[in-house]
Each structure stands twice: as C-alpha cells, then as structure tokens.
Amino acid sequence: MSDDLFTTGVSLADKTVRTITVYLAVAALLRIGGKRGIAQLNNFDLVVMLLMSNVVQNAIIGPDDSLTGGLAGVAILMAVNAVVVRLAAAVPAIGTLVEGTPTVLARDGHYLRSALRREGLRQADLEATIQHRGCTSVGDTTLVRLEPGGALFVRLRPEEENADRQDVDELRTRLDRIERKLDTLADRL
Image (cartoon, rainbow, N blue to C red; front, side, top):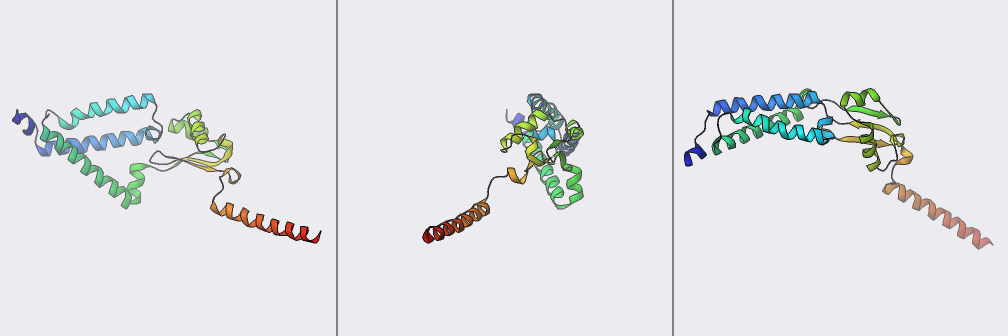
C-alpha cells in the first residue's frame, strides 16, 4: 500500500516536461479560444472546461497515480503559473502575448457587431450585463470593452452615471445659496 502512495510511475523530469507542456498547450488554446471563454462561461463552455481538466490530467500524470507524483505535478503546475504570471506583469510584451488586448464591443451606444462575432458573444448576454450596471440598454453607454482577463468594462454616458460625493456636495452648496436668497427675499417682504 505505501509503495502505491510514494513510488512514482515516472521520473520527476518526465513529470516536469509533461506538466509544462500541458500548461503551455492549454494556455495557448484558451488564448486562441478568446476572452469570452473566461468572461461569459455558458453551460456548454463549462462542460468543455470540466472535460478538458479530466482529459489533460492523464497527460500530466502519465502512468503515475501515486500521491507523490500527483503532489509533484501540482507543485510544478503552480510554479510554472507563478513564473508566467510574474513575467506577464513585469514585461508588457509578454503580458500582451499571454493575455491579449482589450476588445471594444460597443462605442457611443452602438454595438460593434464584428467584435461581438469575433469574441463569440451574444448581444443578449451583454445587454444583461449592462443592465446589471444600472443602464437600460447599450444606448446608455459610451464604451463597452472586454478586458484581456475576461472582465467587462462599461462606461456610462455622463448623464447616466450615479452621483458621487462631489456631486452631492455641489448640490448641497447650491441649495444653501438658494435658501439664503429665499430668506433674504422673505425678509424684504
């Protein structure tokens, strides 16, 4: 029993090559697949992601189902990911290569249909996201952009934006002036 736990079926070098190769291949496929795969997982995308994790598991562990081999694979996977993430953050060109660039999906209240097609996004899904941001439709926006990590950035038209602290302070100051003028007028009468 203990042999099954701690005796690996493949060498550490073999496991390292397998893990790095699978990591790079999956990262490249996700990059080719586009940002939508991360941003807006639908039921079909979720099924693919779950099955993909099962498919690549065997490629990483090979004939090794030992505890030691599994832990080594996880450690290598996390180490490779840490290096790639830090390189992407430190070197802008690598960041762009790994993550891509933002994609403008709508500008000045109108969808860019070619961008939606290219990213594989449905207009109805974006409308729902835009409505969660407090708009009634894309017409209330000046910019809708899909970020490299899959987040959706929505910039509202100025008249659609919520008031901030500065706006409230400005209104309070104006109201105080109006009250003083009204008090002055009332005193004259």
